Image (cartoon, rainbow over all chains, first blue to last red; front, side, top):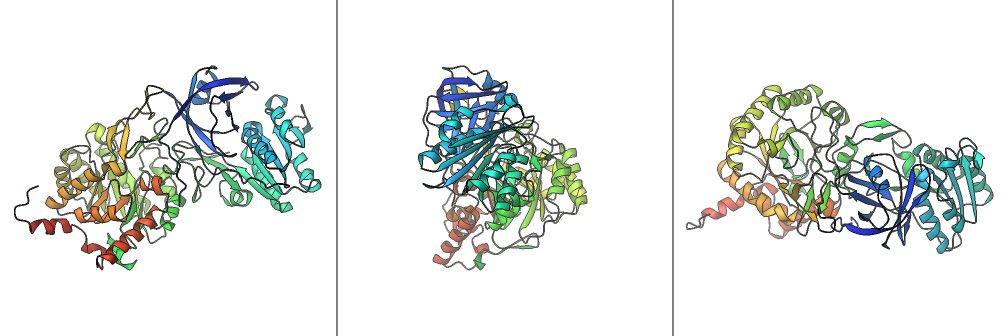
Length: 266
Length: 315
């Protein structure tokens, strides 16, 4: 049975604070606290422009981070403190929250670190031990590290060019952490190739894993079918999938559907 | 649930419940998922000549009494679409939905479906979308003249049974259905979202839907769909798929009593999840058990027989 996710209510609230994270990412703190769980998403509406799914970075205050990559996100970058922002949600299945005493490893690539921070925060509040890895192409792409410092036992950084932290992908830190720190559960969000590699690594070491998929969405509530991945819908059955589920999805790490439904290579 | 078994153009369906076009049907795997959840047939996303991104969002909105959408026919285009739906092996009927700007486009699309040699039970031509410029009611495709021209063109290009999807939004559905029948259509799908309709967000002082307006569906439009189906059944001898606001088994029974041979279901997927098909089938089955019906066909159009018993009944 479907858990009822009403799309009837559109929240419109004032922007409390805007933080410029780097050359392309802004964080928007909203004057609203919302009952949302880590891994869930909002459909953010910019009147006259469009609507996009956005990961939730915190529930109190409600926080989202957005990279300037298109029409809607471009308009979001023009928003000012005190202005209204509108959204519906939260939608989708959250990450499984770890229990007290468990050790988790959270891995965020690029702005994938946003929902990962939210999870790490709640996990720590629940008594889990949190290790974190943040990956980026270069030093400039590492965001939300201070937030993760506050909730992690240890935080590690990797960059493709070695300009910050260890040179290489998140795997160079993830692999030894899984082994040495006796990790119970790995959570990841970021570029799909990265998540695929993490899911495979977890399979190899037989560690539970959850990934957060991103797909083109039109409705967010399980009707339009735009976000179909095999027989599942990213918005309803995801966006969080177990590593095993994700690896069984034929397009995972390979292809995505665009707005018309055509498959494109990732 | 053997009572629900029925025929659909030579195919034996486990029940008369069909997934409506535009809902879930972007991929073959999604259609299979709908089948796993209990429907007797499925309809693809409507395929157009060129790929379409559809309207900017928000594409959906809920109101007090129903659901609204303005998708704008997102689809990968007929060529990619037919590849996607190739290799249909299930017992459930596969209906290929097509949308064209005019009779020539519909003809081209139908020809491509014919040539693709899919395992398609029927082609549905949609003449009734209320919110996509260039298509449907926005260009008067539901008029008897337009219906005649489109049906004749499509019938020349394909032997696959033809369903014509009409709108509850424009008066004259009976004349349109008659025109469709005379031009060779094999069935009418009576119903689509109603409208265009509008919802305004009072905080933003803006229409909610990205396109400004959209089609209304769900419980709000069921009585209108029922009346349209009733009217067609009364006058035109042609099988009918009923569409509009069916959310539970008794809704489906009511629509079949008005004259629908099959029921198509879309918005119920929003309210009840894809399990809606199974729920509706079980609810129909239970109702028929309770009132002693043995076969779902016994219900089709019974209102028309009943009404004859009341001589002074005027409509």
